[in-house]
Amino acid sequence: MQKLLEVVSPKALASASNSAAFSAKSEDADASQILPIGGKAQTTASEDLLIVSPYTSRPHLLDLTLLNGAQILLAKALTILVPVAASYATSPYISSFNWKAVFSLLAASAKASGHAWKEQFFYVIIFRSQIPPSTSRSDLAALDMKAHAEAMAGNGLLKYWFGTPDAEGRNLATCGCLPVLLSSGRF
Image: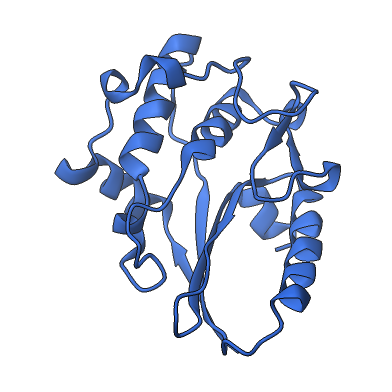
């Protein structure tokens, strides 16, 4: 199995979201999607637990009570992150996802909450892999699920997404996290 870890700096993602192709304005967000700090996103029966990955059992949920307002707003905005390119496994990362919609929703949600956004540091991590099609997917899924639960215990993983391998077994997984998670050694 070949794996390449890419780290996109906050400045690179911010500059991409501010470029002409990714300009994010609060007016661009669909009003039905605006998620104030206390608003609904993919929460569970408890409003304090947010679904931030394909895994929905308790060890995989984000505890919003451990986050500040900006972190809550970003975590909720990231719930709408989806690929916009079928070739996301091999395409440039920035153009593979709906970042404009995420940042538009973030801006609209901050405005609706009366949150004065100040510079924040978050990290986006990109995992690109190529796994032979003959590999046992169930074994990989079990390992991934265990690793995700461990990362969630670090209280800094705001989003985790992974795709489906293409015909050559190439895939992409990505996550957004707080600097504390990276410095904790849990990731």
